[in-house]
Image 1: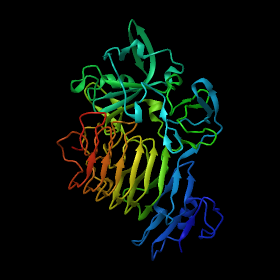
Image 2: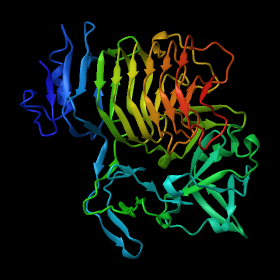
Image 3: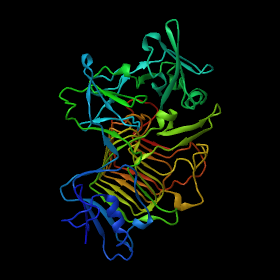
Length: 489
């Protein structure tokens, strides 16, 4: 029979409708006792309500369907289960009555996003966003490649507390950069801003993308983020990591005594990972579930330089040799086949939404909604063979099982993604083979809509017979340049 999970259940229960389990992880463990000789699909019905994950919910070979039958994790009819990597923040008190700023204890884990009553709050910034959260920037007055500094008018900076936690977000052609400030020195009416390593000097030495590319001279758009002094507009928040205090200025109608405030704490909420490319997990089906509130702390720890399509620089030199890393994802899949993600919602995530990393084949990503995502909406396939492979080297592995092959991405609605990693894309495909990307709506991205391919190479790659058909792509490249509705290499 089916297995049932409910937030008010108990993991010592048998998992029936009347006596459900409490966690999806326990249901997964119970499936392991039933899935060796399957004669029909096994269904786990997930009741409505909230399922907090304090660590990644993992699936592996032992959790697979067998004999061509699926193990299905499905929302109970008419209900909306939420699988969340977030934790509530409670105990808000008035901190600055004159400016209507509240504060609460944030605990010991840092975060870069905050959600109040289901709506993303704005990390305190200067200049402020315009009405309806429309993008707003200042512009650089200059840059010095040799001295490794950016120049802005002195009026744009001040003596901010916690200066080394303040970030400068710079729009550089097709790749945005999050640069952690090291120092600010005033020289007359100009302020010289220097940055921490490793992002400096990489951002100055690499020729692509660079400050003066594509005819912009030095006037790149930028904003500052993450200082208490920027907390001057309703809906903004700031985390003081030194005191573990979070500050928030409520929007009209928000009562902090009753507001639900969620901070994301887990980088990957759920993962499916087979043992190897040749020994895979498979036949897992997820339907009707909401996955939300993943975190991504790398920009706070190392800065963030987007090479292209959300693949971030690990190294970069003056000869345009670059290596890149891959964003974390709220839900990730690797070494798995015959996966089906249908009619799920992926939302309020700190980097990529859903990522099929490598070693996947014959999978279906169909009818999902992907929205309010900081980075890429859906990613699939490797962009480089490894994080030490120079990123112009064509990916064409001898192990063909590593290539994401015969996967289908169709009927998905992907909108309002790339909200923080603006150089990300709606659907980011590295080097897939026989992929079918069709009948998706991709909209409101800050760079490209759908990107397939990488490497800028004439060499033979893993890619063959890929189809991108019948997609409705609009309101893309809202901030950055040198992209398109569809970008292929």
